[in-house]
Image (cartoon, rainbow, N blue to C red; front, side, top):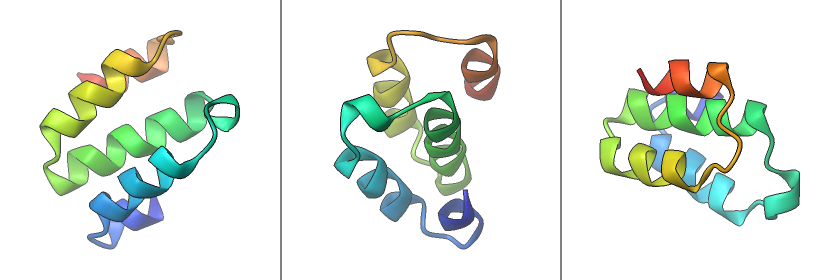
Length: 64
């Protein structure tokens, strides 16, 4: 989320993409979706959201 607040949303997405899938949890997913929102990366947010298999209430709320 620090990336997003500092205008580095693209870097946040890149870092998320570099993470092994087994290390991605709901916290990292919410953070990257927030980063996309702050950076105006709506298409990227939608792509990441569609890749998330377990959509918690928090993740869905983040997308709204």
